[in-house]
Amino acid sequence: MNIISWNVNGLRAVLKKNFKEWLLEASPDILCIQETKLQGEQVNDEIRNIGEYKAYFSFAEKKGYSGVATYTKEEPVSVRHGIGIERFDSEGRILITEFKDFELLNIYFPNGQSSEERLNYKMEFYDALLEFCDKEVSEGKRLVICGDYNTAHTEKDIKNAKANEGTSGFLPMERAWMDKFIRQGYTDTYRKINGDKIEYSWWSYMFKARERNVGWRIDYHFVSNNLLENVTDARILTDVMGSDHCPVILYLNF
Image 1: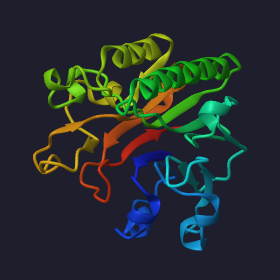
Image 2 (image 1 turned 120 degrees about the vertical axis):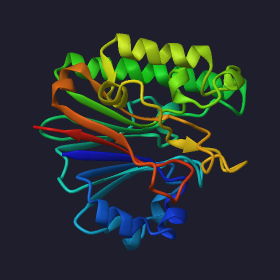
Image 3 (image 1 turned 90 degrees about the vertical axis):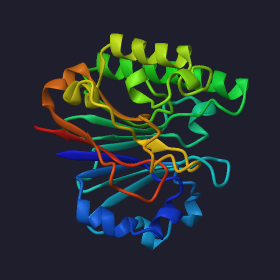
Image 4 (image 1 turned 180 degrees about the vertical axis):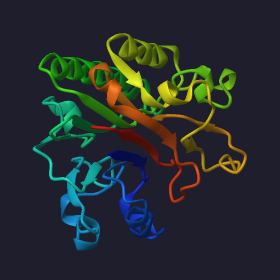
């Protein structure tokens, strides 16, 4: 089984850039996308009905903002929207699909760059999410937690570490949360498989950053450690265009 995660920076925009053709050719078992920027009434047949995929969506209350979607060939056992905390769930950032062998969390984590208030919101979101994941694992669930985390974990995950020490997305407190996440029983599958390899998943649209490969690795597939033995590969699909992010892929064996 393989699961692709991709922040598309607007689903309607990426549909104009051969998204549907790419999806049908890549043919992942599951595709998780973030930042759909959609409302329910904007989900037409072109968006909902792609090949053999069943599609599920979470929407933000604010128009043109946030949002996630999961396309899956296998029908989930259950689908949940959010983690039961209104101030986080109202932004349409979390979609949970449960399958026979694991539970999949498709998440668009908040960005903390716009203000101190949003940075605080991001850190509170992180903590609430970790508490939720711990509860699920304590009940015997095996988790895949994928999406745009909006944080580069270590200096290996960002081109210009020194220059970004004071920027949200690479702040000590954000990186410390990633350390805590790992300590509490979750694994960054890309690092597990690829060691110290340096690749990025996001590049600014400015200054030809992607062309120069001046990027950040902020898109991840973490798994709870009770699922780790099922992980067989994890890659970054840097050649896929259409967004300021590229897709990341996880392979599992059941």
